Length: 341
Image 1 (cartoon, rainbow, N blue to C red):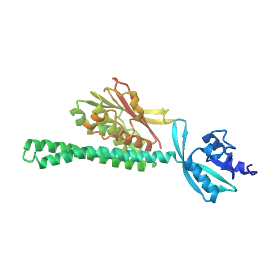
Image 2 (cartoon, helix red, strand yellow; image 1 turned 90 degrees about the vertical axis):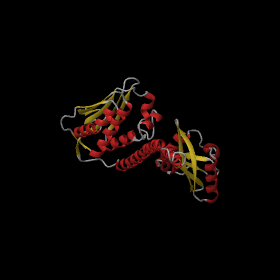
Image 3 (tube, rainbow, N blue to C red; image 1 turned 180 degrees about the vertical axis):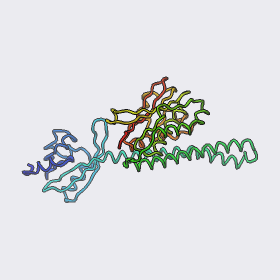
Image 4 (cartoon, rainbow, N blue to C red; image 1 turned 60 degrees about the vertical axis):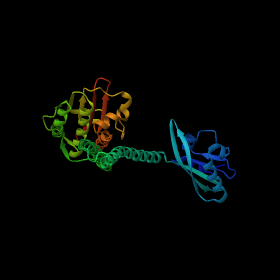
């Protein structure tokens, strides 16, 4: 029987807590533990109730010598697998087991591992090609002028690809580091749109794309980082030119009220008349290295990080990223930004 007041103390704990008595039976579970482990296990042997050998060994050890122990406990909440650290501590004649949710840390670790694997793959491909061409130039193509120029051109292209990847990785790192610091300076977003359009005019012309800007005739000030907002518009417009159709329109609109932000703000939309994107891809487009068409992305020099950078910059500005597309009906990538801090 739990001592008077002990049950109130256990219920006050925000973590799942299980009290195991000296007879190795589950004496008490607080509300978070009942929700986590399920009902009907009080009074049962902890080995049966908790069902995981590592935890059973930790509890048995603490019951035997009183020394604190920890063990990993694998759980499941809905469709999500969870990872917990179980802490076994002496409590009177029994053992108190508390569970600390480590799922987010595990997922973050997995994301880091996936990120390193993706970066390694993205760098290895052009490096392998360059090493092969260097070996060829040192051997059979040493005296072949035409082959030498062709190989050097390919090596230059691959080197530029690696340079873009490193540049975007550094940019992503800086954006993530600054994300919690909200920009306070005022930026003329209309001027940003016009300057980006002028910078990309030649790129659009070479691709046979008509690039135009609407709604940016007059100054429109928003709180922001000018360089980062220029990067957002540039990334979205470049993507539309590379993957869209024959026309790209960048539109600036001032809103008295934006439902996304629950206040006044502006929207910048980059629309193209290209082939569109299958809806199945839309939720993942802003993930690092996610590509709808990997082969085409690499052909046009994409690194797979552009939209991830956009997402983090927009988050820093307390805005929202919007993506809408239908197969055969083009795509619209837009951001909404607050007008005031």
